[in-house]
Length: 281
Length: 281
Image 1 (spheres, chains in turn cyan, brown):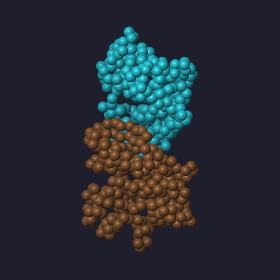
Image 2 (tube, chains in turn brown, red):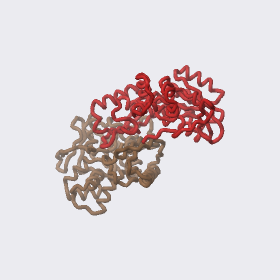
Image 3 (cartoon, helix red, strand yellow):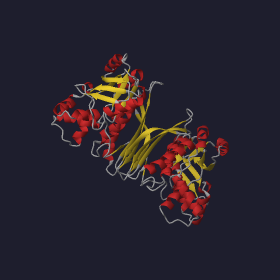
Image 4 (cartoon, chains in turn yellow, blue):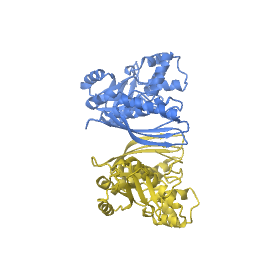
């Protein structure tokens, strides 16, 4: 469920509000190896939701139905005196017995992420007008775009069922979410921070202000896949993902123990994060 | 989706808020011949949702999971600066090819309803402190209870798949919902108002104030089943429903034509309703 003013900004473009509300759900399916099939939409409209807003909102849904191959199958529309709220339930299909849980990671497994990490967190910081290093207009636009329109990697879904011992989507920050995966699997993870894939724009931001690396690793809204794959099949997974057009990056390894997710800096020192994951409100 | 202050009152008992939010969804499944299986709950909590409120809310869900044989399978919890909002998606199972639509009613079919009609509408009027005839405390409590806790007839679900040509739940008032069914089926319906089953409390209210009959026929929140059954099998349907402990009442007949749902008074005159169905807000 997303609420205006909490999970998105009331003045965000309505087509992007719709697409993000849908994609955060599709992201969960994809990270579980499922292909999106149908979704149900409940929306509480506020006083600002006029015909133009709704038309743009519907156009956003239509675009993503085409892109992700799913259809609206029902739902509800109500009015609220409060902020606009959207609740989407997405239903997908996965091969029987091939749904990777959070709890399946085993010592020795390689840790992978899809896409680039942290763009959305930097984009949100820009939207909130936090003091960030001066960035080129194109970089700013890219980062804000990543916040407003996540890109869950649809083509990875069938590969996760084949290769992953554990998988989840990254919604509340890589560091915190990897910690949850470790907790559920009763293991630890060791990650080289330098191995975490950053976009060119994020790399430029971090180069200008090194503290932004922590923001990238702990900020939310990535909606990329975090998964673990046995070391033996890791190269095959990497190759298959590249062939599917959704490259994945090996960022670390699963270890025994209960230390959780440890990120090491270039000198091999464990990094300490002020807050491992992003909390709305 | 239900919103505090719109679909329920913020001071309503939290266990009943939970059960009603769930039951209005189960009602839709049951009226389509489906047995509830799982549900997903998204809830936006407001500042008043403290631990005690949540515990009572969860207890209500637990009670209805037992009563309706379904389980919570996922969802989301967020905070909202606005009124508390609850969105439930319920998923059920029906026999393949046996899901009665709204569009299947045929001239000659008998029109049935389950339960008693109008109690919830009168209960809501009492909660809103509308000027109603003086009613005994027990009648008041029963009518308010019917508004706060609808009773979708679970045992009817398998019978609808076997007998009904068309079915829907009555959520926005019998008159308006029967009009929708007629529209979808491209038929009309003729109903004897006197045949519509009223509870003893509703009958006493209508006896004291005849205008309340219209309120009963057009008010919302019944969450009973409205269905049509071929005349030949109508007696078997009635008998099977009675055996299942969920009696149904034959209230009219489907006719050709596009006049919609016509309710006739004791003198055979078509009744005119100020508003055929209830609209929230």
